[in-house]
Amino acid sequence: MKKIAIFVEGQTELIFTRELLLKCFEWQGIWIECYTLFNDVNLIPVDYSYKSPNAIVYYQIINIGNDAKVLSAILKREKYLYSQSFNKIIGLRDMYSKEYKQAVKTQEIKPEINQKFIEGHLSTIKARAKHPEKIEFHFAIMELEAWLLGIKDIFFRFDKTLTDEKIEMELNVKLSAIDPEREIFHPASLVSKIMKIVGDNYDKKKGEVNKFMGRITKEDFHSLLESGKCNTFKGYFESLEINTTQKK
Image (tube, one colour):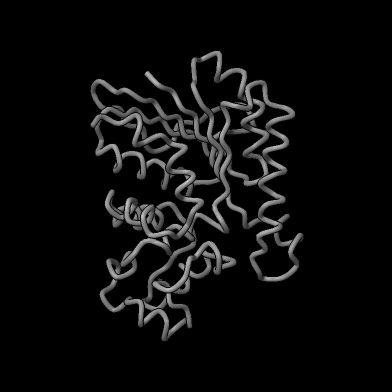
């Protein structure tokens, strides 16, 4: 059985990854276990694990609870994971962070700063990891919510009045015409503002993230891949090896 460990910065990323895997595998041939890393040492099981009969790939998703600690957690646990026959380690965190805001000092996305952060992580992996070739690290630019903004008609499924035109009229953003990861500095804030138009909320709570994921289909993920938007999602999706490990 192929074994892949995925380290993510928070609850939103854990839920998103779990549901992405389950829906794209169609709940077949997959074994998922979800954990929170406590005190940098103990893995605490969280909702929810899933094991299908005759699973051919095992994913362990670990919520670190801190964007700045995702890489260090990978490096600390790398030796143990390889001793447990894991084939690959994946990291996922947002680019939007305290250190990013300090670096840019404005509410702008700076590709050169993005690249600096990416190269810094890759250099650390190369210098400190025992097997850097087995580690793949990803940033969602600027936040994972940019991927939600890139999914066509997702807001319409919450409320039929939340059309592209309605959102543009209320917030002066035409989602169909932009690549969210190139133009939205704080995607989670925009998602929150959109939901407030219809009296709903989004502040990354577990129930709210689950509501979004419950409205996203396997076809939505593939449409996003083909849209030319959110290349960071494409890189993460390919890293998960969904298309190469699932049954045909």
